[in-house]
Image 1 (tube, one colour):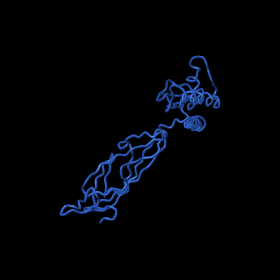
Image 2: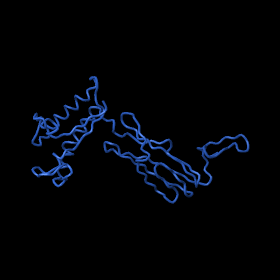
Image 3: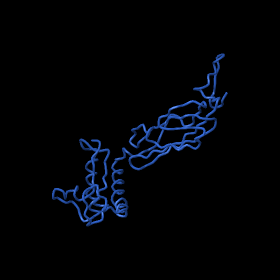
Length: 219
């Protein structure tokens, strides 16, 4: 089974049907109950088990106690300090427990692309693909959702993985992407643009006669 939602609030943890497992902002009771649910749902010896959990932050933890609201869209009772306390004392401990149970499918490991040192013919374009590699081994194309920071816009233009060499020179591109567990990773591209790029894919040493070319040495 891929995922289930867990909401650490008394209503969703039993009080909604008259069987409260904990209440009165009992942090230990909340963690003990919800962590025990995760333990059962991630038991790899069972017929089915989870590898992903969606964790909801309920207004129970973030709203000022006693203030009346007119619905979930009414944020008049929201208290930022309570949010910070809930994240530190409830949400982060639950995330850490989930990770200890092997629920790390959305933990981002690294970003990759086929090549990080790129030589371009000035005036040309080249597309690259940025892949996110996750802790469980699966990958995803994040080319269009990544953020690109370009050190030299006069030399290079980049958007959604498309490189455009505008002038001779060098540019460094920092590619950033934030995973589902709020774990950002970066990848650095070094791009060289010139009217005469000595690269295997752009230089043909056999135009006149049979020849060879070593891209590393440029000979």
